[in-house]
Length: 154
View (tube, helix red, strand yellow):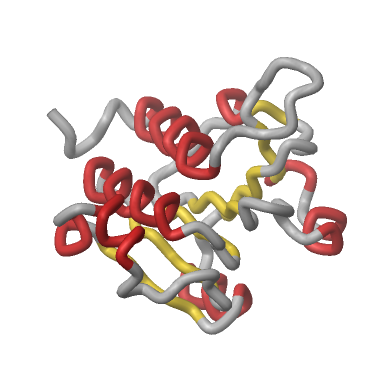
């Protein structure tokens, strides 16, 4: 299926919501350290409810370790400055979506070095800063899954 990568997430409730999202879409969640919360945080447990046992969640020391584990997967960085809409890309099973911290997004040096054809954005009204992380992740993963005809879903 697909992979969602959270680079240094800060808010446990967002991670909990994304655990639920992954459980419901079959995506694997990759949490890249440092995390802004402990994985036993009450907010994470509350938001994730009992979905933690239904989702595949991996933790990585840093982004290079995560990317090594993903191997040949295509990794799309999701950033407000992305050159193409998330819905304009033809996704394949195994693709991964990289999201930055809630407060800052992806680091500027990473954005500047990322291949332009792998930078996507979720369209928004001009002048608005960004979507909530868990909402953006849901928009992107459901579009990718839709393109795969919701394989494995009902």
